[in-house]
Length: 395
Image (cartoon, rainbow, N blue to C red; front, side, top):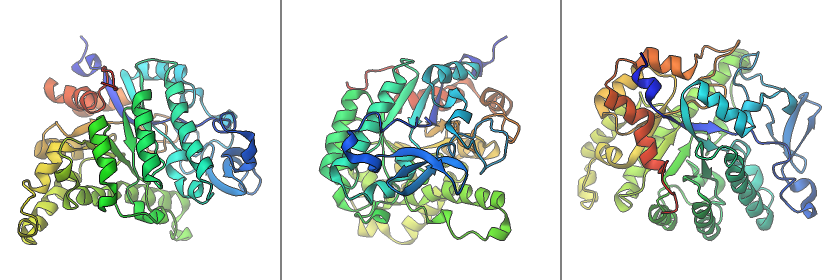
């Protein structure tokens, strides 16, 4: 007899496409030469890596650790070592079928985590062309398996007018939402709560584009400063957890900065950060809200932080067990989404160098006893509603 979970068309709300080496060189004019993001062999580290000019960015195989033979941070050294399920849409769709996953929300790697190096180019035309080419690539890539992939639009966030134009273009192309940095001030721009961004929030609300805050999309200094005596694996584990918790600050800013109040119909998603910590964070926000007399300062704010969260903020889980159940008990199922983080090092991807089990096995063993209504919400319905999966995103 089929289980309830096996009958649900699961929506995986955080996955990544490993970018092909010619993504930008095949799309951008040759006049920009090696300033175009490109791949070459890094002799010092004995691996293929992305470069802009002479500046190294990420390793090609860095985001492609699902099923890899060595524990993180070790990864495939060459593009040819990467399993096609990470870069071929048809192969990915077949892989999804084995786990009962109907659709995946797509996030970038290079375009998300290396934005500073793109800004350092000081070439506005090339910067914009790079972002537009990536957004076009996502749509083209997903077209190989219609209905299976939901692209998220990257933004030229350093130029607000171009950001608004790219949002409109991507909404027309069929992108299901936008990615925004957790910490624009880290790039020398106005902070997240500055009214400078109100035009963007308003446009996203009008276009019905949910705003997604993926971890590690702000201050990356957390990647530095680890004591090498700890060991590379211990430091890597510490870095990941620190990134997860960074979205607590983002949620606090969305609420205390009045962004949720001013844009009540705009969904915000905390991506790849888990959910078990959210009840505590909301308890702390509610306590501080009352304890600091925020209502006296802002009588227009008509909800508590936890109520703003329940209205329009969402979190994603993928490996938790007790944490998710605690969040479900405290929050209910309406603000919780499921992800796998495929094919990143923390993803739910079995292999010789991971503690992960297959997504369907994890879900069955950990949540198989939950009510059907709860399962359908967290595995499908919430994501389908937010990202309008199964609907025409342009309507």
